Length: 298
Image (cartoon, rainbow, N blue to C red; front, side, top):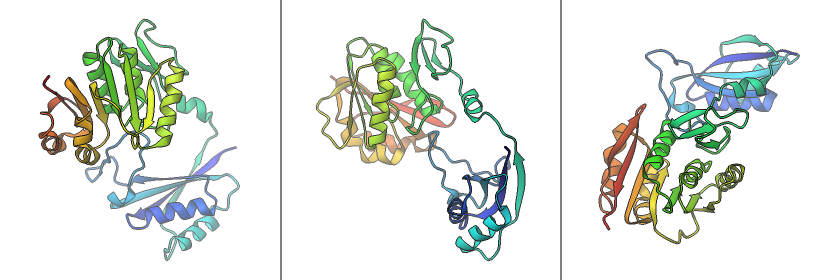
């Protein structure tokens, strides 16, 4: 059975309210996209896959709703427009969506990702292109970090060059656990992943089990008991700056620190925030994102 996709024009002020009203009125799903995407007026939003976009940053939005073939689309749009406080239904277009194997289609969009010559990220439905490499089984999910985002790649690449057998590693803001899991596979002896989101901690435990990896996981509201030879934090600029004394304070003498989730133009702000604790420099850059890194003297 086919479905119908309805694309409505919306302003920054009305997009979110209209989206919620459409869901309440019976739409199967609703998404908000930049109506100016692909033009010189496009406003990219940076973040990990899975992060919710903020439609208020777009002057013009498209609200896209999916309906059953037998749905009363005109009636539903009228109800939703009224509930969203609009005077009338915005201009819209309707397109038929053919029935597809959505699981197969989604899986086809995620192929194995080569991080370095020795490290691959492989979805569970794929065979590894290199069985002799270090392979991390990781499926796209709600927790951040599947290897596809530039910041995750930058951190994984840093780990492959700095983790040595027997060292200790702290992954601050572990998300899916991918960085901590990589550290174990690279030879780290003691690995701790922390996050403020209980769902991320649970996801990390699950992914570690799937990869036959042993690591400790905890909410970052709990005390972190030690200093670590390698500390990596792939979060965002604001929390990185606020947490500077906490994160830098977990680096052992002679240890190394890597930070990502930082856009190139934000680098100096983070460097300044960490200057009282550890000197940082730009270690690498990919698609506008950077990795900051530094070492603590013995």
